[in-house]
Length: 261
Image 1 (tube, one colour):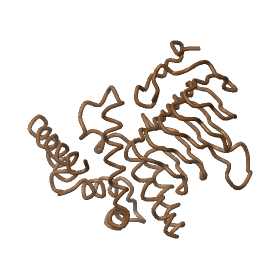
Image 2 (cartoon, rainbow, N blue to C red):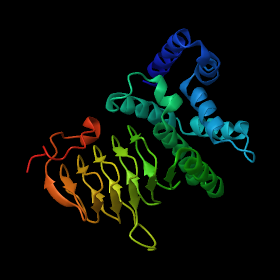
Image 3 (cartoon, rainbow, N blue to C red):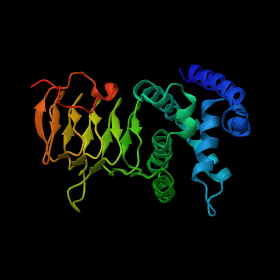
């Protein structure tokens, strides 16, 4: 799958430079000068994250080490491209996902931070987390476990705590918090099961489980477990009914008025 996605990205990049010559040098630098998705991503993300203290070449080396040591990172990155392409009504090709969409980019930066955290390089992981927050407006603790097929739509203002676990095929919109309820220690953040949609501005707080295929309404505050395939809305959130789709993350339908009771 990764190879197929890379070939499509390469094809789209060639089409872009024909339509918009002013982007030729940028597209060549980011895509056409590379021979793989991992090479392209490491270049794009390293140049986004670098600053006066940490040069791009050093950050890129970290990505390359992570990709080589944990090939599943790039496999998950490929799944995330497909997730955005299939779910985002404003995205009609693969190339904009890796070049412009900060939600996608922030997830891949987190994957590096998580790799470093898991391999005992916690100070460096926290540096990468800090740069992720500064550059993309997304603050994800390096210890947080995130699956594949994840979409952070718009992404600005997303905060995800240390002991959060996000399974596969989850969609999260802007201004969402997956946090704790205070300064408690230990396992204190939400567990998000597969297929969940968390709509804009929702706050999910505490060591609670959001069941498979659940939908969290925009602006809701969730303080208790949510049953699988259940829509919850309000402050505090209460069950409203059952989402029309078995996997709301895939439909991206934030309208809860049509959900069955």
